[in-house]
Length: 187
Image (tube, rainbow, N blue to C red):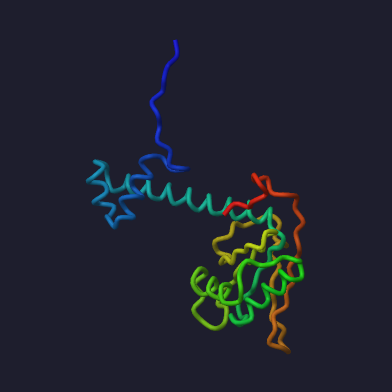
């Protein structure tokens, strides 16, 4: 005799209850109101939300590490570098690697300003730059990057005190081909 299991709804890493809590919270409801709707305590809603957010953080760290494995170069830019110098630095490094970067000065600058949240003319936090073999790139605040055992992958970009140019001091990575269908990188 074959037992047919009811079809389960999947929500990625979330349980159905975690998904429901996040969906209601995203609509602007308080934890107390969500608890009323679901017929549970506010403490239960808080625990479900906390569990879901831990899963989100772990997924972000996992993706970051995966993408780093299939990148061409990864480097860190330290605080204190002029924002207007960073796009040229990234474009120059891509050129050195023979990679046509998918973005120009304006696009890179906007990534720094809006995605990373840099509002001042001088970089006020450490950022990590990942350049992929296909020319795509990411600029991420290092506080969102997972702590890695191979810390020398994140070499700093330092500012030369005698000139206004930044120096790249990272290292190139030479991984094998990505395990994705058609050679496309995720994301």
